[in-house]
Amino acid sequence: MGEREPEGTVINVWGELVALGPVRRDLVPLYQRWINDFRTLRTLAAPPRPLTLEEEERWYEDRSGEVAFTVYAREGLRPVGITSLRDVDHRNRSASFGIMIGEPGLRGRGYGTEATRLMLDYAFTALGLHNVMLSVYEHNLAGRRAYEKAGFREIGRRRQCRRMGGRVWDEIFMDCLATEFESPVLKRVLAPDQPRERPS
Image (tube, rainbow, N blue to C red; front, side):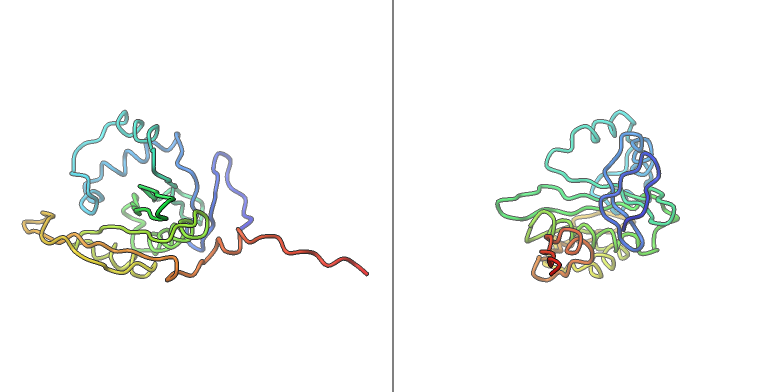
């Protein structure tokens, strides 16, 4: 915390390995490159197909009901992915979570796990939500491990609904409750001021 961001970069939340900041118009071509990598898409709900820059720009312009952050590797503040809360429902205090580490060479370093934990912290501590859920395909072993480490638990499955690699796989539903989560960062950042003692 208290680090200096490079010009043009805004950071909202600092973790140990990653930092989260707003999605940026100047990074839309990078987001487009990530979403066009079929190795990335195999773990997402979107079917593998080419996505144009114009389509990615439309996503950037219309993110109603979604709170999205760019994920940066803390060292050098290099953008490595995107994470978001979708369908944020303040009345019922719930949302759905998604994440994509877009740089293939930077997966497996704990960035996804920490970004997931920071997003749960944001959901519960900053937004006051109570339940955050996600879905992950059975074949996405790395994603499942990251979500479990961050605090998610399996709550059910839709059986054999995803075709990949010549077979069908389950879609796994996971969630995390505010009462099951300990804030790693924002509890300190968003703490109310304490009264100062007056000198006698």
